[in-house]
Image 1 (cartoon, rainbow, N blue to C red):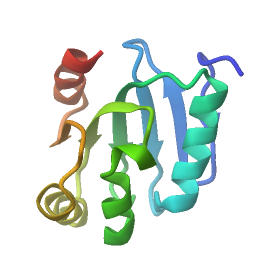
Image 2 (image 1 turned 90 degrees about the vertical axis):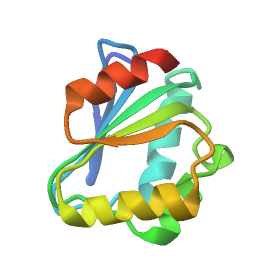
Image 3 (image 1 turned 180 degrees about the vertical axis):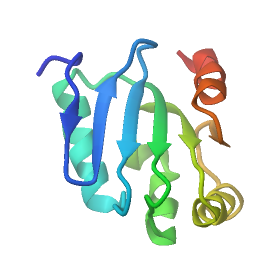
Image 4 (image 1 turned 45 degrees about the vertical axis):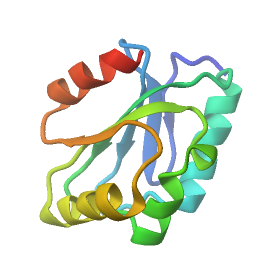
Length: 127
């Protein structure tokens, strides 16, 4: 599988962007959870199992749950992420973000942003 391609699943898409980051877009009214992480890891393995910064773009009504957030915070469960930058917009996403940072305590650098450009600039230090 060529890493320049964009792979589209039911709930999200993934590509390697121009900054050589994994860029994930979680679609509106869709959840990113355990099954979606499995799908993502399969693509990353097919693309060579490279550890890269990850830019996660969450559409306004994209969601996840707190049990998955705790799972995602562990490096062993998300082995190809060097750092995670989430771009979020809704109040529900902000609540989950606070839970993720304060309760789950991610093992890799993680920040939440309102702006894709700011998120991208922050991730460049982990490239």
